Length: 260
Image (cartoon, rainbow, N blue to C red; front, side, top):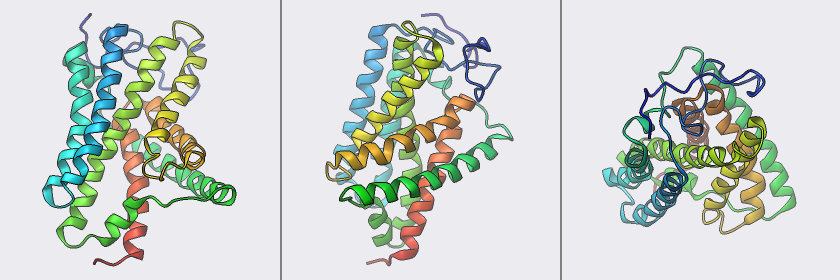
C-alpha cells in the first residue's frame, strides 16, 4: 500500500477521459492513487458493502421511530467506510469526499431536474408495460407525526449518503478490474452499469420482487445519479442530488398524506 494525500489522484490523459469529466484529477483508488488496493482488499470492501446493506435491513424494523431511526442509516455509512479505512488506510475514505465548489450547486440542481424528468418518463413506461408497486417510504413519511416527521428527513439524508457509498465503492472496484482489460471509457461505462444493476436489485424487496420495475425504473436513474460523482469526483455532489431528488418525492407524499 502506498500512502498519499486524499486529493492525490492525478490527472487523466485527455484521450482517456470523457468530455464531461473533471480534467485536473482522476477518479480515486482504481489505479492505485491515492492508495493501492489489491484484489483481496477490493473483495473485502465489496463484502462490507453487502454487510452494511444487511445491517440496514436487519436493524430498520428495530428502530421504527424516534432518534433510533438514525442507527441503521449510520451503520449503512460507517461499515463500508470503516472497512475501506482498515483495508487501505485512513486516507482512503477521504478520497471519496472533496470540498464543494461553487459550480457544484448548479450540477446538483441540473441533475435533479434531469432525474425528475427521467423518473416521470420511466414511470409512465413501466406502469404502461407492467403491474407496479409503490415505494412504501412515501407512505411512511405521510403517516408520521410530530418529531418523527422531522427526523425522517434527517435519517434519510444519511441513508442516501449510504446509498451513494453502496454504489460508488462497487463502481470503483469494478473499474479497478475492468481498467486492466479494456480502454478506460469502456471500463467506466461497464462499471457504472454493473453498479446500477446492483442498486436496482437491492430494491427488489421494496417493490415486492418486481424485477422489471426495479431494472427498467432504477438502472437509468442510478446512472443519472452517478453522473455528478463522475463529473466532480465528489460524493457530496452525488449525495446532494440524491437527497434533493428523494426529498422532493417525500415532500409530495407529505403534502398528499395526513398523520395518523
